[in-house]
Image 1: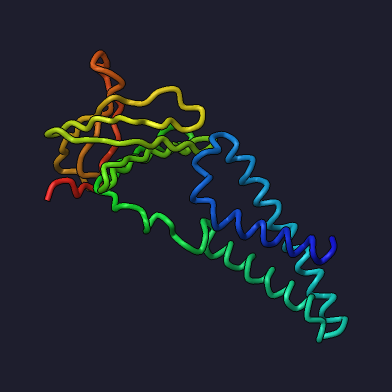
Image 2: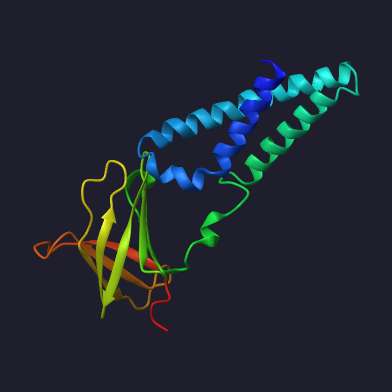
Amino acid sequence: MKRKGLFLATIVFFLAINTSYFWIGNLGIFAILIFGLVFILFFVLLAFLIGQMKSLVKGRHNDKQRIILVGTMVFVLVTSLLFPTGIINFEKFDSESLLIAQREGAANCMTTLKLKENNKFMERNVCFGISETKGDYRIVNDTIYFHNVSLGLHEKEFYEYAIIKKRKNSVSFIGEIVRYESLADTTGNALWIVKNKLEK
């Protein structure tokens, strides 16, 4: 691979890692494929880096283009190892999460619901892919109503409302949020509350 192509591939890899916050939740099951490609590209770039470093040692030490290329590749690969979701934690710039509830299902699948301070919610499902459902919420007493819902990839429907239930004498979680698809739903689907700043 020529130097320009290698430099371009390195920059694309860096941008993909550091902007994943904005697009990873829209991939659904394709996230597995993308993760696989990113994993392969990391080792491909590592192999090329080793080759470039050998050439730098054997060749001219004042080869500025190769020095810049090697320095850029080292920076990108090291930071991707230290910060696999990107150097900047963009979630810190979001509205604060007042309530966080989650539950692990079969095959290590994880569902996480976050209620934001600005009355927005986000539910992320990680199970053979990543899907994010977003929208607005309002709270009446102990009931949360979801509306203006934007479904994640491969999601067909979301819950109409949820009820917050306190749970005493639990070390791992402080309560439950039971979500219901409609008024006819008498079973519900529970998540465990791990953070609750709704009550002050």
